[in-house]
Length: 545
Image (cartoon, rainbow, N blue to C red; front, side):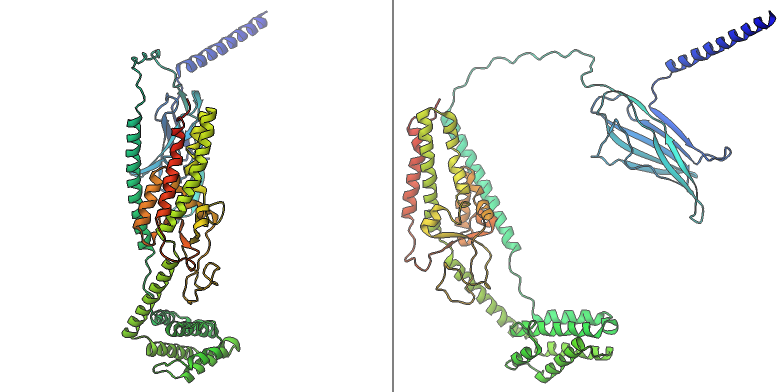
């Protein structure tokens, strides 16, 4: 009986202890709020070793609103001989790391302790009670000699926060009162037309000023620089070769190849022939008719023969022989280089050649009168198609079709040169769109068969993309035509803004068969007829209701 009573007493005591423990744990859970700050300590395997790194993490706001910016601030304290590697992009999901701000790291030393603070910006993109994952921060110790000692990780415990929805508020949202009634305003057509014209004038003025500035900047970048004399380039390469140690250490064949290239390029640039691609026999044969001051042809022949032996027969050559041949090349350059008077005469001849090419170039470029005639024909074709489409829209009372026909003419002006190498107007007048780059080495084109000058620039028909690019500005109603006309009359060679942008030009394919100066009268008459066709839709009754 006593044994049973003792057993019952022990059981009751154990039940009371369990109930007391559960009650205490429940009270502790109720009393403790959601933490916004976490503290972690990293220690060694030995229980007596001091903790090398202590870490403290907290959020700048534990109850943000959806879309708010939050900062995670992590403070690491450790000794100077301990290195801590905080991740640059920690995993903060369900928060979103703010990529617009890379964050920052602050460090300071307090006595023998280094305090590092890492600040990571994030965005609250999910509402409700959230829990951030734990973050592991590796660390390692180094001794005085730089050797690595102990290493480990310190864990930042998970942080908790509550993100409020944007719809959560203390006050009930009420709709705003309706606005006061306003009287209806009738359509003022003269005012609308006046404002439209004023806006077009302002846009045209700004676009013209920008186009002229664009041309000036482009012309300044493309201004031809005076050519460098051949002896300047040759002496600079010889100086570089002598300053280096290639005469002492490089292979004799490569040094002779470089010296031969320097001499050939100098002779070709000095006496105006292509010496770099000639054989030794061809080079010596060409130099027989050249008067070289202070240099005998036999000396150049001896250098060329020795160079061929070293390069192709692999005849050995000492560094002294290499320096001697380099001095010989320098002597040839210094004795035969152009004088100041010869350089001035060469520059004058080059300027005359470029001026002659420009005169020939302008001879085949289409004058403004022919270009205006071609444009008037294209506008007439577009206006006729627009008038026919508007007549159908008025007859069928189709308002959408009438509005679409207003965009037909700008669209036609933009794509008129894409369907073929020239628009219908240019084909009738005899014009073509060509690249602005001259090709002086290609055969003459069929559009200029009778011109036989050697320096006559030839032209290549422009591709489809430049032909479209040059007309994109014409798709802007009124303002595009004004800007193109202003730049065409102001800029040199009458190349309008579209040609400057697409790097094209309009040439006269019938310049040899054309007699007399082109007249402006046909273009003016065609433009008047096109204007009449444009006004026909409004004369027929205007826009359908």
